[in-house]
Length: 235
Image (tube, one colour):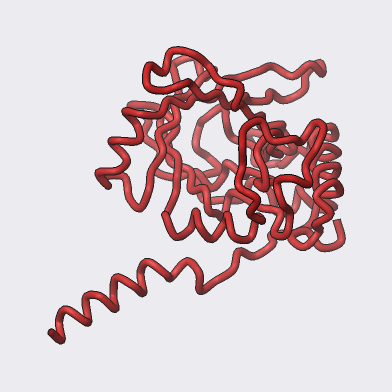
């Protein structure tokens, strides 16, 4: 009985541990170059490397791909944790507050970013990206708890998700990416549930972070529309 209770307590502690620490704000939108793209995976050689603002998916705000991990050069894959520190949420923002260019492209529960982040943390939700040889498209495999968890194999057989490269309409501007979903069970037809990753900052080979004006302005518009500046004080 003692060992059983100890094991249960250990599991409960592990399961609930993500709730013990709240995500910390890395900085403001006024000093993106000082904090963006500094994660341990910043040197992973993937075309997806960059800081992006989400459009069409709420209450997600920014994705900093420098926090990718587990790079596998043979299959051109890496893992990206969806509960942070690379994904930033608008803490108090509700999906219904987002309209126009930031409207959701699929039905979304009316839950604020604060609780979405905690739910993803409890599930240890991550995505595994497997790039094609050209670096223009990646398959996305959802991961819950850990990569070998049986539910992940079921999810991969049921859900087809990909992300594809879209060149910027601005000459010499960085590329944006389009996330596409397919209708199960055949997974042969794209659905309308797409969202976009618009570049806010990129990282030069020497390590310098370059902020992209149109993407930064889009991030500001999204934050203002959400009426939530709790995560980026002073931005």
